[in-house]
Length: 294
Image 1: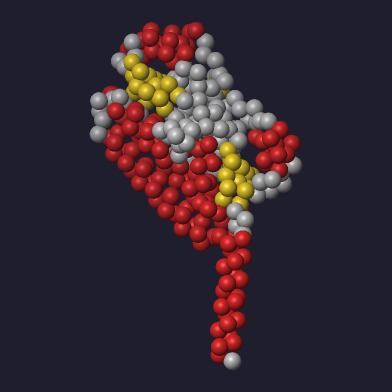
Image 2: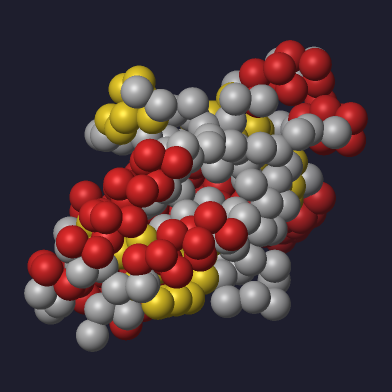
């Protein structure tokens, strides 16, 4: 009888293991690459993740395709940034017929306001502070656990370890910039995507256009910016991987600013690039900006 019970227990254990092995990973669709990578890092082997906006793509000007609608219709979890970032997302979700929960990764973030075309709006680029990135990861972890309770322990373990890594990155970035005189912590970028980064790490960013890459700078604003760059002796400008660099290069030429490199504020690079994950992009941005201030 004892042997029989042991055999039954073994069969049940093998059955449970078999069911776990056969369990399908969650089908996750994220609006753009930063969110997609965070979901991959948190979910590990328990998720398959698709980013609607691809590497080096612009989430502001993105135009969804019918294939994107199909991808959403098959999703178990949909992740967006929120804060007005994806103006195209609500229509796409409605057209796709997706009925599940839309996870807002920025939930709980202390937002900052900015002036864009004379109007006060919420800055949507919250992930550019690693402190906020850790909050994003926590929100996504909780959503994935709710969608796949059978994998809760594994997702919680990988997610918590990832959150810890991002908090360490945040501390490292604070230390990195604290060692640089405040007067040198000023740079020019293509558009206003680094507000949270600047607020958290004490860096002043100037840009010819507001939060959206679709905005256009007028001649008087450009002239005022060139004058400000000269007056404040801002000597470095950066291009962004997802934007047209021509305007910022023209402004730099007029002000005497020199190129500092390429930044990745809204889109990760391709897999073989220098910023193929959120962590890599953040490290790259910090090192590239800080190195220009020597």
